[in-house]
Image 1 (cartoon, helix red, strand yellow):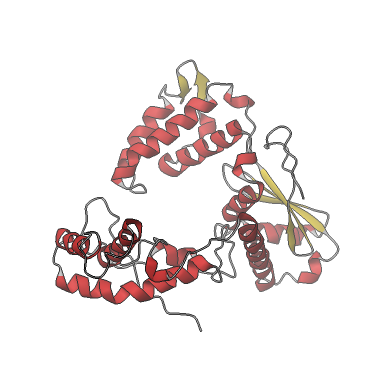
Image 2 (image 1 turned 120 degrees about the vertical axis):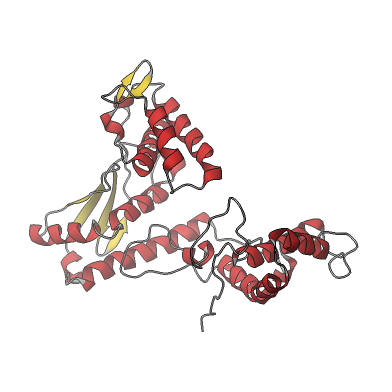
Length: 334
């Protein structure tokens, strides 16, 4: 029987710089472990993992403490002071036997649950009664691939495309990195292929599949300029709704048709954006600036676009080499 998770994110004390919502919303760790069946989720997390079980245990330990603390302490500063005395002072009557790292973990978990409605997720917490081991990269990839296969098959089956259709044919899914538009190559019935494309281009499916393919390849195996060009284009689209292909490379950088520098445009747009918390806007600009510096150190047009492809046979995804974007000499194992 699945444990009920009661905690929800909410900035109870209106702490400056923290995300604010008009009403409680699911905590990030809860959303991360939610399973979906009929849309593609590029990165699925396993509820059988030790990390999930540890988060649930922290929830059980700290939820009622958080409710009690909010009733007792009227300000965030009072809460911090009380929990500091409880955990961080060496002469704490109950917690002095623990190491500073352990006491700090308990402090952070209880503070976060009390102030924001969910635990900090610090796995050094001694109340977990032992170390928490995360899954290996291979375990994550195997589980994630199983989930994505099931999601794709459910999308097709729920929309009248029988699994028999895939028994004797193979397909290639290719995704545009600028629009995330997915196209399907194959010799099967064109009307059904068109229906498959429509389904996979809906509900963010193609975008999530793009991320899944990239994760399968491993970003460290992609040519650094190809990856930087994709990430710069993605950030520009996300925060300005502009297309990097509309800019021209000059000695002064990337310039639009009106002579405006891409960095100046991004800096102004990020100031206005509600998609980035104020304390992270400077960092977002710095990251974008580094990507632009990297790709303009060479001929931007000579950097290939990061189109990604993956095979689909018998209802199962099959990795492909994507040799146009990987590092020279990288041997991809199918």
